[in-house]
Image (cartoon, rainbow, N blue to C red):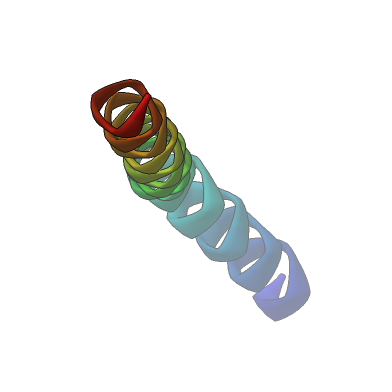
Length: 51
């Protein structure tokens, strides 16, 4: 019985934590992409100014 309750608790923890993990991961990915895009835009702008 103890094993079953432990497995149930572990599953509950995973189910509760997964949405937070997804939010954090998607936030990190979005932030990384945003920074990368911003740097590319800045690079293109500086090139246009020089020419």
